[in-house]
Image 1: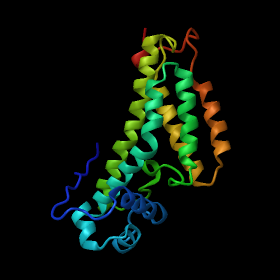
Image 2: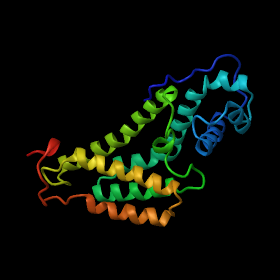
Image 3: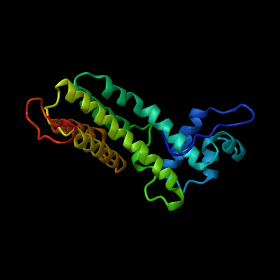
Image 4: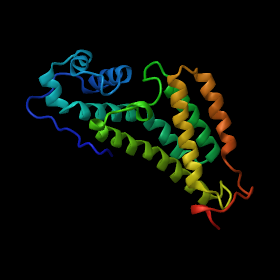
Length: 216
């Protein structure tokens, strides 16, 4: 899923809660940024010593990516599953965007999406992390596109809908919600934006311009 090989710990069994340690690391990375966060700060927040951290996670880059994947699994697996499994397209998109507003403003999660904002302005030495997060952001675009392709095949979108552009539009909107959340936007404000996003979905029979995968 990422360009950074997951670390496999060796030696004695771990004596700490890995999920809790990852959540603590996530908070440090979110508050301090990937590069400014020091191993000392991470060890202190996670409640482990440096040898244990290196043995369990390898290095800072591997720890960061595992923390991000923990964030994705914990907070985003359910909304993406909802988008995929709900048969009604507008209900699926509306509920997904509403759930996104809840996740992005949750007090239990970093305010804004780690995948979108986690490595802003990284140095060339951290480009492997930057590229890994870019790949994760592309997964979101792919998720939207696959859902819209199914809707097109099912007749829930008009023949000729450019599903690639529609997916990019919703992916950009999702990233924008993340920035708004980081800037302090309230959940209710993001929910209003989420509701408005449904107007971007063309109605079946409306005759969208032919292009890309949606060509007649």
